[in-house]
Length: 254
Length: 245
Image (tube, rainbow over all chains, first blue to last red; front, side, top):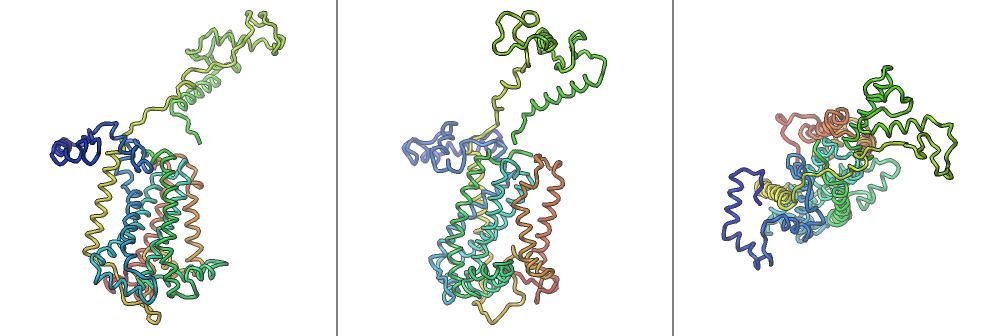
């Protein structure tokens, strides 16, 4: 673990940690890891190679690729926020029924009568806004580094799709509390869709499940929000990550 | 598509410059073959090509009148100097044999990348937790179709579009402008064929993107903070905030 680039204090601290009893009891052979874990290039490779992480990361990457100042972790954080939103979202689903008669009361009950309900709802909401922001910043970062240039052109296209799915996910979630903010924000948004040429009215009708927002809209957007859009997003994410590796890892230094 | 390796490109450029210099200056320089060897199409001399090979090649080229060998040429030396072969080209070893990939400075993903990822995820979780403890998500009163709030605003990321609605026909503001913007964004790698990634080579692309991003950022800001009742322009420090996340 001792990194040559780290300062003396850091390596001294990591030596102390590794010499401690707690460390020894975790990583000694026969404990959590049957064969123990000692820091060697071979074992470092095995950590990736013998785990599901191998689907996401290669064993080694260019030294440049681990520089936080280059990526600002924005892509990874977007993915992490997606996981975070899935976890908190599943919690919220336990307490929520997508009908006009019950939705708002369910949220109210969740906030006042369910343990950690308010906290989890807050986290879900703020994480959603943060994800829109981080996906957007990730796109800007990729553009300014010219990382969309060959051979990564198509991954940029996938990325723009992911940005749109992120916006749609956030927008469909916006309606679900069924309060004044949700209703009228969605009214403004869907009115704009109605102006799509040729099939605008049809698009609006399909999305609203009728000619105006109502309980059918709520069910429809709920299904989109918790099932369909995440499903599509995950497929595009898989292609996005796969292409990152196939195109030779993240783009090089400028 | 394929990038020419740096060392090959440099070598080709040097050779080109040399050939140009040789063709331009009439007087044979030290580099050109000796005067008795006809120059013409002969490659300019490079010390690394043995001179007897070069001479053999040019000598052979000098004798086109010799009966065309063809596949059935007799083995008995009929060419100049008794050679029955001629040198077409000399391929220097470096250009075809130096294909070994250059060593890349690599580090193990564990721990170098995973630790960074883990720590950044931890930091974001901590931030979200603290933010969620101190700031509550809005929950206004129950949706009421008969009570339109004033102003009614879309979610913040669509406020740029709503802002455009105040200036253009809904068809233009809601469909045409964002549609064109989106298509340009998707097509960016196919429009921008400049292979360089260096900022100093892509001043136009960077300026265009910055203007584009600023355009939306400014519209979103105006829509979020500077629009009050009736979606009229207000200053937040006078009229207060009309903005819910």
